Amino acid sequence: MSAPRSTRVEVNGWVILDKPYGMTSTHAVSQLKRIYNGKKAGHAGTLDPLASGILPIAFGEATKTVPFVQDGQKAYRFTVRWGAETTTDDTEGSVTQTSDIRPSVAQIEVALPHFIGEILQRPPAFSAIKVGGERAYDLARDGEEVVLEARPITIHDLRLVDSTADEAVLEAECGKGTYVRALARDLGRMFGCYGHVTALRRTRVGPFTELDAVPLDELKASAESAVHALLPVETGLSELACVIVDRNGAARLRRGQSLILRGRDAPAEGETVYAACGGVPVAFGVVDHGQLVPSRVFNLPE
Image (cartoon, rainbow, N blue to C red; front, side, top):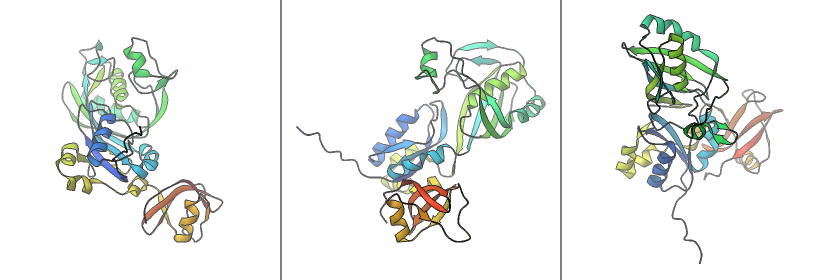
């Protein structure tokens, strides 16, 4: 007996979900696949269940552009509570150290520049990093001691936006691989007062900001809202240069063949660009010896 044929449809594009607090990124993708009845979907960068904010979700051909969005700059707004460090560096874990010391606003302002630029950061034990083929958080939950190696990250900006005696609200702009929970931990240790994250919101991922984000309830409310929220595939490539090609050039690229780029506005050697024909993305790839060598090709209707 043959398996029942799937009733899911081809959906291509991006939906920038304003993920609610308490939901996993995987569950969020499942929810949107159900709303759009899409065959294929994935997210660009995991957002912890205890965090809210921007979770870009790609459908169909847009999934090919996920690495460009995932590797883009990110921004967060988060609250650090002073006086306690936890096993998870947030409110989920158990308290491991406490202190009655509290940093002043002046101390915080002086400390923040030390975390800007390329720095070494040790990821939290409760993270998705693999250790010997297993996720660090699985090992930590099983009671194993997990000590991850510090690794280079880039923080473009870190600023204080509000402060009380026990808490500080900060905003960070950072590169791939940065753990905000580790920032809270390291700030607390610098002040000798300890600290952990109590609230976290992601406000930017690559080209997408809060202006693009749509709440889950709004997507569920009506089919019209869901259709309006679906952004074109090429929005995931908006931080790359676009090369306009004719139909013959598009046909070459779709066959996986390289295309000679002419003209004074041709992209630089080694640059990653994408090609479009008639407003439809065709392929993306790297410029090599004056030619666009396609890495991935899109299967989109013209």
